[in-house]
Length: 237
Image 1 (cartoon, one colour):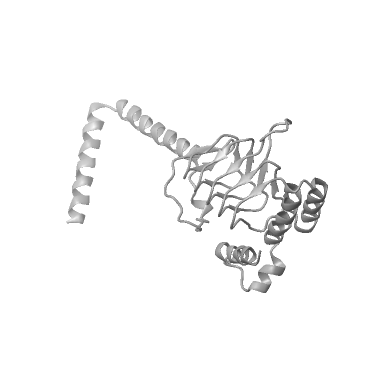
Image 2 (cartoon, rainbow, N blue to C red; image 1 turned 60 degrees about the vertical axis):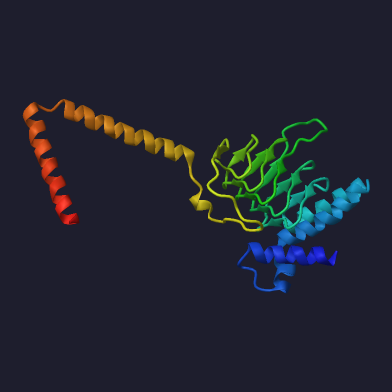
């Protein structure tokens, strides 16, 4: 038990540069408190003391602003940064070394009593206010951008952004226990598509413009471009 507590405290230091001391982490980190409350609630839940487990999770939500169903399965070195508004459903499975930010929802999409919440792989980062819904699997080393709504599975090492979430090709795999926190560098597929369309439109407008020029104007333009090219070449030399 004490080894687990030490590991949880060390996880906070690994994921939050604002942490200054052990006593500060123990007293002032609701994400850590929520994990400890959940471990107690989950123990009672697995021993079939369902009401006690639910009541402890209710107290957990009241004190920390984080709601974790006692039936959820949480891996090691799990960290919730800030945490207010985080919701984790009953049949959720979370792997090791997972990082969640404020407002994340791991929710269900079915009223049937079955596996209806997501399975989150190891070393996954879920950005602020992101929502992952349904019995889907998010592979190891994935990154989910802030505000995304994910309803489909994501392969290992991918990045998911947007509403609905779009899976992008992985740029690089994260090293073990290390998280890339540069969410502002996550690519936006919609913006990339729009930029491509705008560039193509400008090229077509340029072609149409030159097609409507007279032969004499084209000769003058060609001469000017040739002179400009020669000047640039001279400057480089």
